[in-house]
Amino acid sequence: MELSSYLIYLSVSIVASVSIGPSAVLAASNGLNFGRRKALSGVLGHVTAIFILAILSAAGIGSIFLASEWAYQLIRVLGCLYLIHIGISMWRSKGNWSLIQENTNTPSSKHLYKKSLLLGLSNPKALVFFTALFPQFLNLKAALLPQLTLLISTSLVNAFLFTFLYALIGYNFKARLLPLLNGGRLGRIMGSMFFGFAAMLAVSK
Image (cartoon, rainbow, N blue to C red; front, top):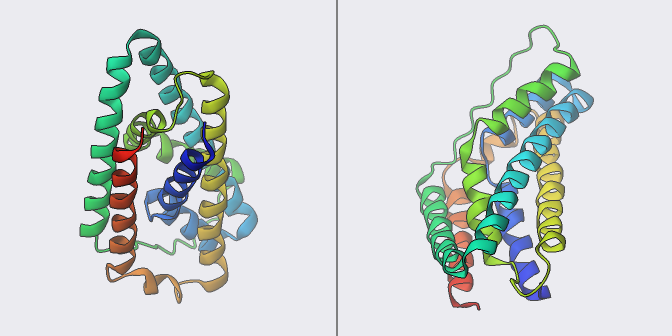
């Protein structure tokens, strides 16, 4: 895998990890209500879900590549279209948070881990995301396993860092900083970035 291709994947992965979704909201809520250590358990549950979905995607993609290069090219095209779809969705999103202060009985770390794990696994978009994204960066002339390991590891690191960041925001700033993300500007910025990623991948070999 060329360095330029990896840097594009790294950029896409970072933007996807920063984007506000159900897992980010849950992490911020856990940090707000239960503190950093408890929230960390939820973050690990989210990372575990990402790992499982990435492995499932990688296994399916590997089989397709071994079967047909035509299928590989088709997935590349569909992947670019999917990135455009994500960009449009982010552009139209109002970016509103739904941060709920529960402040009930403090759950166990195991409970928060399971809750985040199930939330991540219940979201099929992550599976589609990896399936669409991985083929854009793999070199068919080189061994697939090291390349997939690099891409999956990158996604896991970003998932952990940015989800835990939202937990820290919830813990340290409570509800004062989070409303600044509302209004739609963040969604438009990230949506435009996904348009750019799709364009770069479309013209790349």
